[in-house]
Image (cartoon, rainbow, N blue to C red; front, side):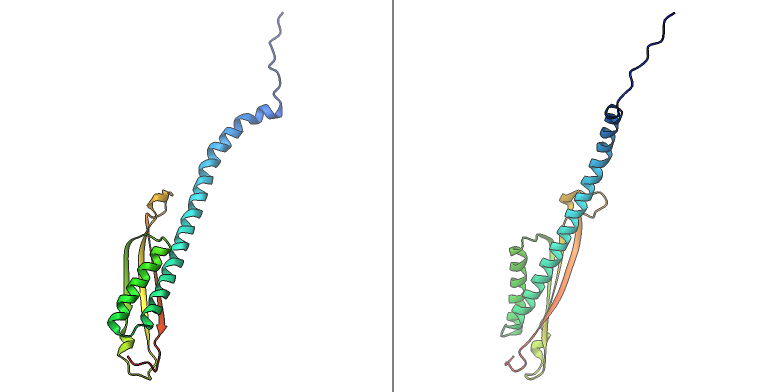
Amino acid sequence: MSHPRRRPRLGAAEREQGSAVIEAAIGAPAFMLFVGLIVFAGRVAIANQAVGSAATEAARSASISRTQAQAADTATAAATQALSNQKVNCLRMTISVDTSGFASPVGTPASVRATITCVVNLSDLSVPGAPGTRTVSASMSSPLDTYRER
């Protein structure tokens, strides 16, 4: 009479070998998605900071200008330069400068306001569920010298 052959018992390491492949197949895409979301959030945060800084620079440049027309021109140039220096590439950018404070009489407190809206391209990230673009906007004001001739 022959006895059926028994299979040798597998050790703990041999039993776990197949599950490591499954863990890697599930864990790697989840990890990559997590890293992609962190990069996405970082790029949006950097764009927010850069647009806010550009709006501040534009308002400050406009407030030290001598005329209303010159204020709008210098504010636009300062905002464009600030975004370029920070390497923020906007698909579309709108720079609006309110220079109506120049019309107020000397001795009256007044200010100028710069508003920048930038559509940032995020399509190169290819994170599932993340939008391809993000609109970032900032608005800052700067006071005019109350007793300077306008």
